Image 1 (cartoon, one colour):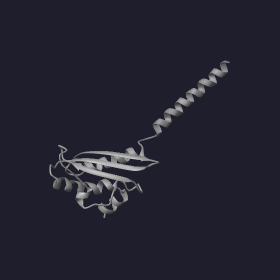
Image 2 (cartoon, rainbow, N blue to C red):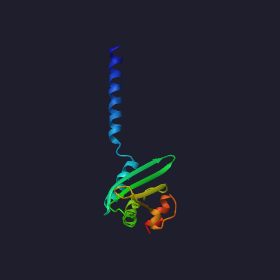
Image 3 (cartoon, helix red, strand yellow):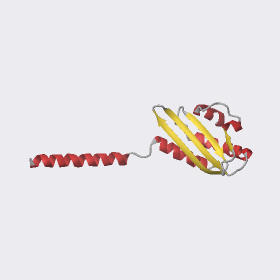
Image 4 (cartoon, rainbow, N blue to C red):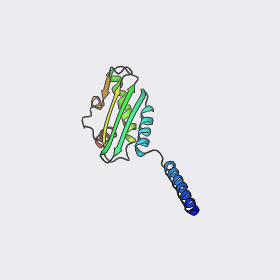
Length: 136
């Protein structure tokens, strides 16, 4: 009986160690890394005050949403900042073959906004179309 208790304790300890090592071996998920890379790319652009990036990668698809806050209070200024921000942001997505992409930029008071359409883009939400248009 005593031997059985020792075996059970050793197995339990082994499972705990294995579980902890599995948790520690993982790093940030691909989605988390992409969110971070896109956030850093956006924040490197002059005129961007903040960036909120949401990346969902699952079996249903790949969905990326980016909300930028610019330093301008007018649509023309926001449009220019967005045009400067799109290439570096989209460059971080090159590992993805496909997906859905949405982006918008807002004034600090949220009163004015601009989207990719203000830059002449009319290709829908396809990530590959965004890249074709803005990474020429």
